[in-house]
Image: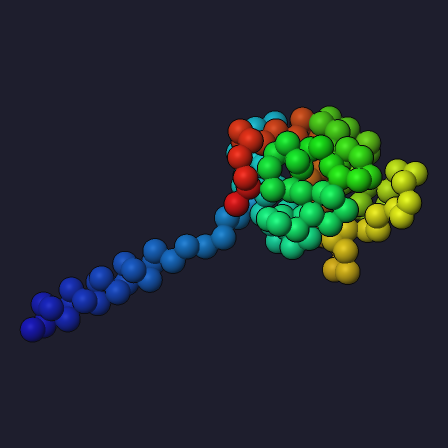
Length: 142
């Protein structure tokens, strides 16, 4: 009986240690790799952008559901210019700078109606764009 209780205690301890935690940023990854996007950039987009630009939601005709759509942009033009954070509409909007697209109505700061992203999150997105905005093969982003 005692051995059974010890075994159950060990099993419970092992199962408790298997709890899945959200991925932690790995800013030491090479930003020119798809892994940097998956580990560092995608979680930022998922928690701050997908409500309006993921799945069936395409506010401003902009979808972040696939790599091609994320790069292409929406009704205000190209969202990401690989190698050029300052020329990327997405970066200007998360910095809360003016969009400067010349297409009315201009999109406002992003995320819309939410607090500005942290400086650390903005820096991660900027590093990713500067390094070429690499992403995994084009398939719907989870």
